[in-house]
Image 1 (cartoon, rainbow, N blue to C red):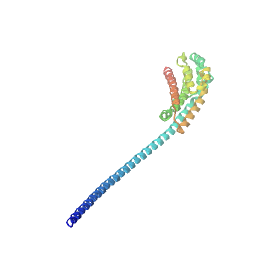
Image 2 (image 1 turned 90 degrees about the vertical axis):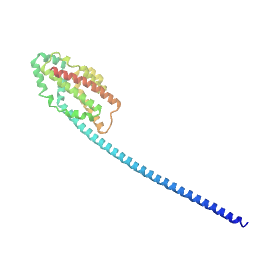
Image 3 (image 1 turned 180 degrees about the vertical axis):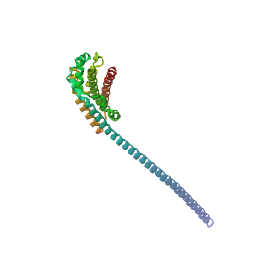
Length: 264
């Protein structure tokens, strides 16, 4: 019995020592893994914070750039409004010509002008010494990229009616045989009906001498559209399509004016 007790004690001590060593190793391994894991977590958090800061910086920079561009664009749009309105006022210098033609039957006057020098002198008198080259319309071309399609369409329609009146008066001043070959008055009617669809019946009913009476309405439509630009309103799909139809009619009239100018 006395021999067995020391052996048992030794075995127990060794077992306890082994357990303690195992616990110590496990604890150290656990702490080591935990420290390494915590270190990696902190590094990951640091990396994420750095990336978030970078993204926020990029976002702020992009927003700042967008705001700056939008502000610059808006300022240019305001300038474009001034430019296009200046061109409208320049065209008004010739508005009296359109008003004069209201009192004349163009087809009959054109026949008389072709054969009667005194009648041509009379036309020169009532037409005054207006020079179309004196109008400065350069602002309109510079403004176009910053206007809505509908605003440009209204301006183009307004300009076409007045420029056509100037061309007709020129024909009467110089006397031209068969002037009807240069003018397609149906195209002007089509243009006016695209711009003022509610006036279609009236436009069809009367001849080209009445076109002058629609200028104020077109000018008012243009003014409303320019105010929409100031408010930041966008052109919807329907208005964009309508603008394209107006511009198509304007192009046809522009070709007529160019051909007439070249022939006279």
